[in-house]
Amino acid sequence: MTFRCRLQLAEALGPTNRWYCSQARGYPVDDRELLLAYFIKSGGAIDFAARYNEAMGAKNRWYCSEYYGRDIREPQILWDYFLNHAQTANTRLEAELCTA
Image (cartoon, rainbow, N blue to C red):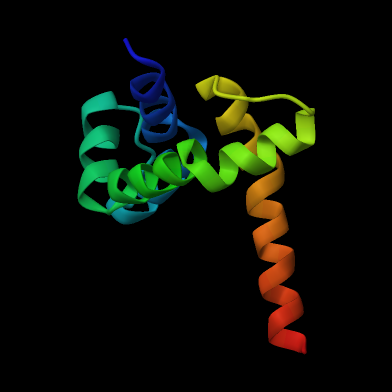
């Protein structure tokens, strides 16, 4: 299974999607098929694709490489940097712009 598929499957079967799916159905959901179907139908797959493309894109690769002081092209490092640094920085910047 590719790196991207493992990440997407982890999100689809993870606690956040499980919670939303359970809320939508009105009962706790543990069935993998229901979770995957909900993830796809609710837009989770599209959202994941957009975030994954952004994480692997040139802008994140540049910032990640600057952060580590070397050229970074490994998908796992780019994804981790995007989740832990890039999204936080973007949220902070948006908050600053809204309060300015």
